[in-house]
Amino acid sequence: MDATRFFSILGHPVRLRALVLLQREGELCVCELTHALGLLQPVVSRHLALLREAGLVDAHREGQWMHYRLAPGLPSWQREVLEQTATALGGQEPYVSDAALLGEMPNRPGSRCCA
Image 1 (spheres, helix red, strand yellow):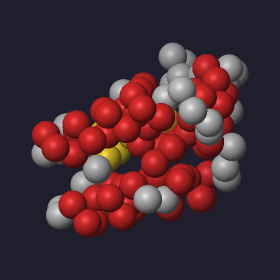
Image 2 (cartoon, rainbow, N blue to C red):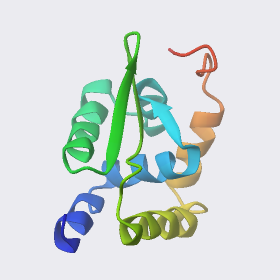
Image 3 (cartoon, helix red, strand yellow):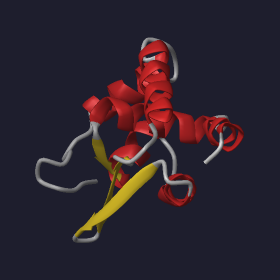
Image 4 (cartoon, rainbow, N blue to C red):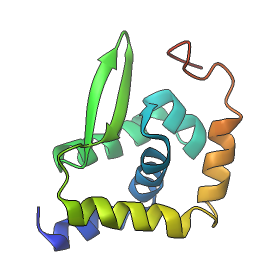
């Protein structure tokens, strides 16, 4: 994917927030993302599908739950942009609140999955 498409995808707040959480956490269930972002599952799933189609995230199913992570085959420049972005934004809103909500989520996977 070229740089214009990559940055266009990052330009949507829901996708950017999801990518920052995935960068920070490694892998998250869609239920964790919906809880942290405070959005309905169809909204989050639509943005995750776009990220998957663009090759930025991978998904796998565990039972009824979909789990997402950054695609391991991302070019190094894209991975670096995501790492630097997550680091730079991690202390700002809404990213601080997203992380706090995720951390406070009841029934968080460990028991694989959720609320």
